[in-house]
Length: 433
Image (cartoon, rainbow, N blue to C red; front, side, top):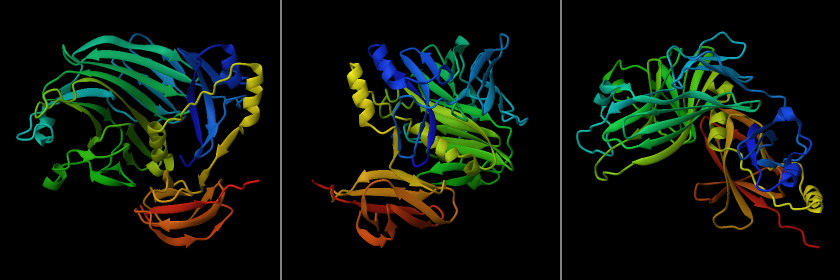
């Protein structure tokens, strides 16, 4: 990503204490949490770079999970506080030090619909399916219980049956570094002509909602005042949808689901269907996916919803280096810089979406950036920490267009709302001695 990140990562321990000490020697206890199979640590990384986990700075962050009687669990971090009922539904969602309640009814509620299209079973979703809404919880198999309670991550697990054939296991996760509550789902799905969705009842009033599409976002009405509005009962979107009023908003982000809808104050994410033609076994079996709910102040642009959705979809990658002796630990520490950041963009509304090798040249990278907020950017400064020979704008086919003024790997860009800019970055040949 083209911005700095504070993340909670899990470091797996494959062999012994020596391996562990190589990575986190010098990290004090309030920046660590042992979990099954590894240790959680908080890590700051630069934009489009890496950070070596050795003697990293301690970040004083904390998250807690508490049982408040038989019907309520409370999760807290420095950003938000969420209350859950035994079904894993969110009964209260607030920002810390803010009295605003962001949900008005139990949210994170699974609902199911009858899904019987007129013609094309696997393609069509008819509007009349909305009239068959009902709770998806057939039987609560495992009430919500705390698995981890901090200081870096709190998790709660709940399991319920949709029917005698299908089950849902949810793990609700609150990381100390994130301003959202994540839900990891495992669904064993064996239904026929059913449509599974999850709902969030927002305490937000607005006539329009925003949805992310590739390289931008669009708005749709939240009402059915006209036949044109009624026809838009579901919206195709990528990583997030957002409902906001003046001063506050609620965003729902996800990793791999594309059907979204906001009707009034009800935000729905489409999860699974069960068509039977042309393939009677389509979508049957085990599914794993994640989504997250993020309350925020201000607009979704000001709150960084776009960046948080990217982070949800692109978690930091952990690379384990093999060390087996004290000498190799020292050699490893001498070989790598503590951190690196190869690309930086000065303006948060400009997203560096793509970094790839050029198709027709070996000495060239392709960078693709876009303006994500919907406003003109007069001067976005792109800094490249690589030996750059020149930078040229290019077409989607990577044909050269205009050479840009570049000094020391720094180039200034002017972008219009939602404009996409592709750059060819020519690298200097390595020096030989």
